[in-house]
Amino acid sequence: MARKKKGIEWVGGIAVMPGYVTGEGEPYRPEMLLWLDDNQLVLGVTTEKPGHLLARASDSLAETMAKPMVGKAGAPSRIRVATKDLANVLRAGHPTIEIVCAPTPELDAVMAVMREHMGDHTEEEQTYLSPDLSPEAMASFFRSAATLYRARPWAHVPANRSLFSLTIEQFGLREAALVVIGQMGESLGFILFSSLDDYALFQEAARALEHDVDAKLPRHFALNFERGADLSRALRKEVSTHGWEVAGPEGWPWPVAVDPDLVSRPPTAKEVTISEAICLSLPQLLTQKKALEAAWNGDGPPVTTTVKVSTHSGDVEVSLRAPHEQVIERPPFDLMADLFEVGMQEEVDEDSRADLEEELLLRFEDSPEAQALAELSFAPLLMDYAASYFNATIATLDAHELRQIIFDIVPRKVSIDAAAASGIIAELRAFYSFLKREFGLKQADACLRELGSDAVKKLSAALSDKRNFGMAKSLFAAGAEAGFDMRSQKGIDEWMRQASSMPLDSFPLPFGIPARPASRADASAKKKKERKSAKKARRKNR
Image 1 (cartoon, rainbow, N blue to C red):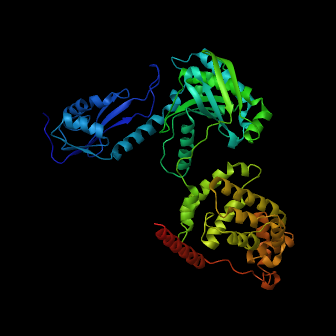
Image 2: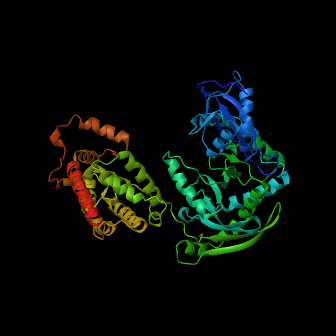
Image 3: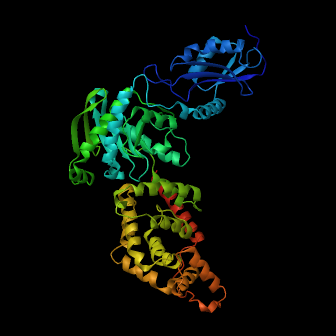
């Protein structure tokens, strides 16, 4: 038996390697059993196909103690592992060593270095080919991809209606979720999820990752169209050597499967066949333009098509439907409740508010209400002013406070032409209509009444009335009247140089300021009173 050293702790664990083994049938990611000493030096490594290492763990530990990769032979007094299964196996095989089940961040650090190292060599190893994918198979795939690229589905499928149902019975796909991407002119192609649930999880995980919150994406498959210049030299040479068809400089297809930890792998022959089938069938569905538009707008039934297409592995029957008929249940993430909670604090947490409002604006951008808007600029401004003047969020801002922001604060603070009034009101009407439909915002109806038929005329008059101008806006207005281009930095600088030599009474200073908005202290007192009332009501209802 190896000699036991007092007070020494090792760390052990099984990790999935950050790369795939190909050429042995279905691609797979090997697992690796590592042993680290208390200096985080790797003492031993055992690799195997997935699912085989647990049975070998006890022997692997004995081999590492007898012959470590660095240092002298010996046994630790304690080993820390992250999973109960591994801990139980080690306790049975090594009863004299204390086995502790606890987090093992040291292994994460080792794997991060390995991922970085392997990433440095990825480009050199890239290829479209594999033992299961011959040059002839890839030629067929490239022809199909060129057909899809020329059909440009991202130019015809609305961003907020991009979800299709896909069924290919012979490959076990039933009601899979197919998403067309690239409506903003970037990341052209599609993403395929095995189910609608996976698509919903992907959306929520993507939002979390945008806010630097750890989240695992569901497994998915994507076909991206890339610029040829952005692909590796090895891939471009391979395409040129075989003469595969490419539809244009930005139409080079790149199929990829993605794991939850964002490790990608080359596609299998089955996945390439599915990609071909999608590339050939989707353009046929998109020829039904009027029916699709009616279906997407809710004015007509879903549009379906079932076609048989020829791929490199034979004929494939594909059924597509738009839109996907199943209802997506959102994971429990009550955005408006979170905004309400932030707005009820004595001082709004700016970081929390910014994150939540960014998420809200992303949802608004994807909503039907926002589709007719050229850009979103006053919904963010409204939420900023709500926090600055009323210590509120959009969830706690009431109709009276909204009226003060739109018809009092904006005319005094924002340098904008009166002709913009109709656009401002249209955007805010759309915003509150979205908040009412999507979240059931209780004050939405009252706020929409403030943005009623006379709101454009009222705001236009306020934006034109110089008595409403604050000091900064008065200064800008005077510059514009003096003939300076106040939309450019050069014009502003020229005006400021001239204005600095003029007496103060040369400027039309504001007067007749309307009643001040609630101060932060007033707003905080109001929120505090509301919180006490809410608590009292809850006690009565218990």
